[in-house]
Each structure stands twice: as structure tokens, then as C-alpha cells.
Image (cartoon, rainbow, N blue to C red):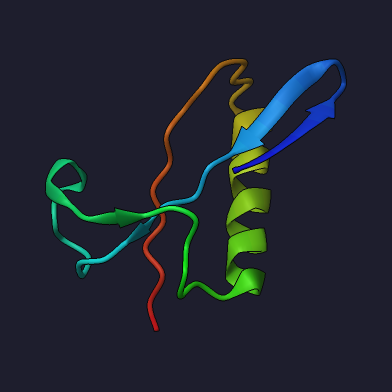
Length: 71
């Protein structure tokens, strides 16, 4: 979990890593927090994309986004 203040609003990121392959329903999946096997460059890219999407859609509250990383 990473937290920081931006423009008076708290921005938080929580990235969980799925233990199962893609296709397993997230409600039934085993998750790892914090991620243990994810490339730090990929994690930073996901955070940047999530922030950009929230800004573009003018999201002002919590939201969930799921990325599939191949490799």
C-alpha cells in the first residue's frame, strides 16, 4: 500500500498479485499483498495508468481496476 497527498486529496494504491492464472474469478482467487513476483517497472506503469484513468474520468472516490500482465 502506498499513500500520498496530491492537490489536497489522498491518493492510495493497493496492488494485489493473483496466484492463479488469468481467468480465475477475483472473488475466488488467492491474492498476495504486497506483490512478490511483479516487476517494479510494471507496478510503476500500472500506478501511472490508474492515476491517468482516474484523472481522465474525473473519479474522485475509490475505484477498482484490473490489469493482466503477460509474461
